[in-house]
Picture 1 (cartoon, helix red, strand yellow):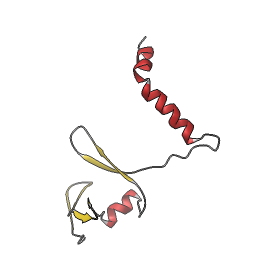
Picture 2 (picture 1 turned 60 degrees about the vertical axis):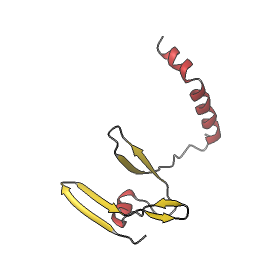
Picture 3 (picture 1 turned 30 degrees about the horizontal axis):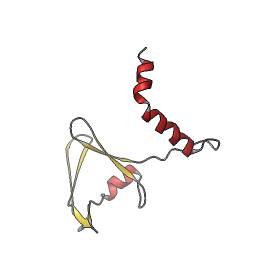
Picture 4 (picture 1 turned 45 degrees about the vertical axis):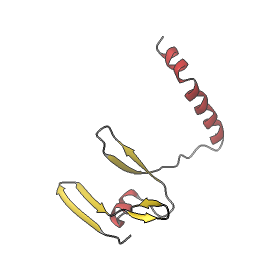
Length: 97
């Protein structure tokens, strides 16, 4: 990537960044402008997520790692999540009674 960035500020508190899409191996990628990476508090190796809202806009967020108390094992929470997801219809029916 050639690092091209175009920054415009057409509304108060709104910054627009433009980047060119480049090839990264077999994928496509976009680099983050330094100022945006600093605002997101991200660095190499961090995870980001892209959230699309109901207006078709995409919001970029840093993935926050949850810190569990020492006595809570993540695999137990995953098992609970699987059960809730599997039985969601039953749980909703019980809630609506």
